Image 1 (cartoon, one colour):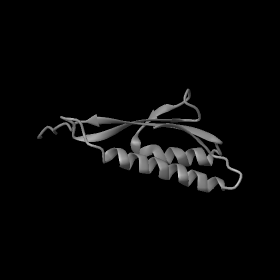
Image 2 (tube, rainbow, N blue to C red):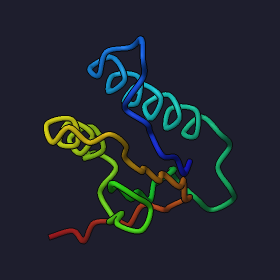
Image 3 (cartoon, helix red, strand yellow):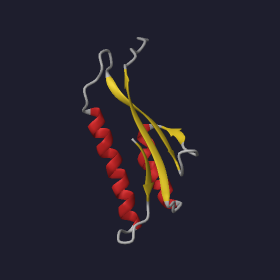
Length: 97
């Protein structure tokens, strides 16, 4: 998912647009996690970028998506760019200590 979210609409309040964006991202991640994993992979990881534009986007952790959207809300951004790319990953074993 590579998307510019527009946070202005003639009939919807700003807060509602923020909640719609968060919900869309949550649904996308849930759908991607339900897809079949390739051979040798243990789970779906996500490479994420967030910023006002695609050029200004910086890498963030998947768990920080809602926090970054809320930050954009507090700064009254009119748009933001979010990139969420699913990548198959494998777990590493812990060293017994």
